[in-house]
Length: 545
Image 1 (tube, rainbow, N blue to C red):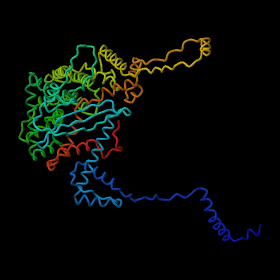
Image 2: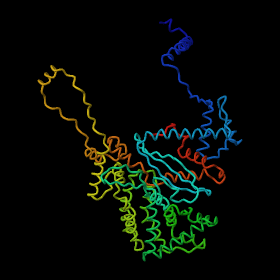
Image 3: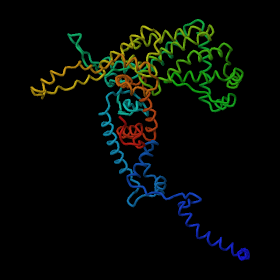
Image 4: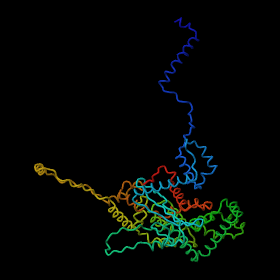
């Protein structure tokens, strides 16, 4: 022990240092490789192939609605040269790129046709649009996916119309607005079927539906204005207040100085109404009514306009209050909603309109009654429409909840049950198999006599409807009820408004600019349809059925 005690401390330190270096790799191998202290970032870019480059350029040109000759632009070419490409990849010239777009459009048509072959129910919308002294008729197509229950919209055509927009030019069976030219087209070309046997069932032609949102527009622009201009309590104040609002809109839209004055005093810009959208008028009036009375009259004084009186200012507030349910209903119907929204909307609209009556003064107290009367008159033809009733009843979020009358609710339920009976698949009877028993085996079967086997439970439409009505309100519950799901797909495929085709024209105005007025009608249609259908940005080439 004494000898060990005499070993110098430096020797022990060297031994520990030596053996620790030898043991470290062994410990490291047992625990695995040591992770790096800092993650390495890979900035290497994979080269783009010729096909990928053309698709990226096409996506940029079509989605941003740029001229095709953009590919010949030196500045655009300089950007493309910075992209690492494969050996043979290069930016196509205008002629080559145009041919590529033609091929892609043909492929889009082929895939769309393949998708339509897998779809049971489709609907269309149509409208006419004019820009740069050219008129076009656009048609969009819609369906609901059986698997996801999501609505899909595609553009089918946007064709040039030459001459007057008369009924002999517009021959379409589709969802349109209530324009007189469309109405006469369907009156003249609607097929008339005659049959001596009234009970004979015949296939009906595609149905044409006037747009509900357009009907609400008519109520607001014609019926409401007629009431306000003929009612003694509101006639004078309505005319004077709207005249002063119009003067404000005209002044601020035509004069830069006036517009700056409005923004300086009210800290916002005025909204200018348009003739095509009534809800823009209400929004514009609401913007003026939101300005405090003192600031509003200060603004009018600086612009050299007549100031608002207290009664006129109060009328603007009450007018916006009474019209608020109508604007909300219009926004819903112009959105991406199913056809089943058509009937619940006016029903709830009448209730909400009557609810604001107590908050109005004598000036506008009769306005809710006039609106409700106009709704009942304008929608009288669709309130008991079978297709609309089934569309609403088969929507889980509506079902029968929107029907306040118990008798009517029971009638719609029976209508849904009857439709389920015709929709449900026929019971599969087992095929008859010829008996292969011998005489001896038949004798044995005669000996073994048992009670008759219970028959399989048959399909009950009433049970499916009752279970559906007792279920939740989520759209995905339709997967549990096959007949209700089929009814939903059949009657909710149409749209309650022509908003989809109007969106097509909004894009068309960005494609057919004054600088591109030499664009041929065919090429314009192809570029517009590929943009509306987002052909180059789809995750899959096939349209979802």
